[in-house]
Each structure stands twice: as C-alpha cells, then as structure tokens.
Image (cartoon, rainbow, N blue to C red):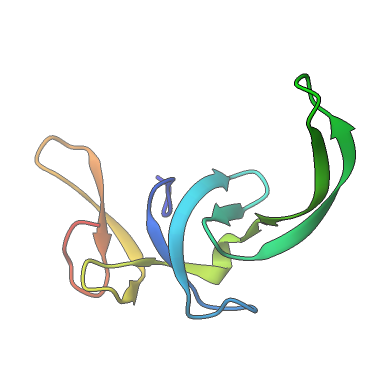
Length: 105
C-alpha cells in the first residue's frame, strides 16, 4: 500500500522549499520521486520553434521538478504534517490512518 498518492496535500520537510505545502501531481514509485504543484520550480530553456499557426514558441519557462519521497509528509486534516499508518476496515480493505490523530487519512 502506498503512503502518498496523486492528489494528496503534502508538506516539504527538507530542502530549499522546506515548510511549504502543495498538491501531488504525480508519483514515480520506481525512482521514489514525487512531483508537487508549485514546489521545486526550475527554469527550462526551450529552443524557439514555429507552431502550425505561425506563432513562435520558445524561451525560458519555469516548471516543477521532482523531489524525493522522503522529503515530504502528508498533511492531516488540521493542517499539520503526519506520518501514515495502515489498518484493515470492516470489509478487510487496507485504509491509511494518521499517526497523529488516528483518523483516516
């Protein structure tokens, strides 16, 4: 069972964006990396090209870059970072729970 999933709100606990929160855009389980909206923004230099409509596209853009999963924690309902646990519900399915509050995450 995965701790962090797409759409979760997470807080960065290490690095240049420490303390900021954002929404998870994608998770790469193989590389243990996560892409968060508005976090770890880097500049990309793209070569100028002409689109089908004759508009020139290119220049310097800022995009989000991936960070390691160990540098983020899930944000609980009260806005504080928490670790994640697991338990079985009545139907026998795994459910994520907050270690801080014990509620479902």
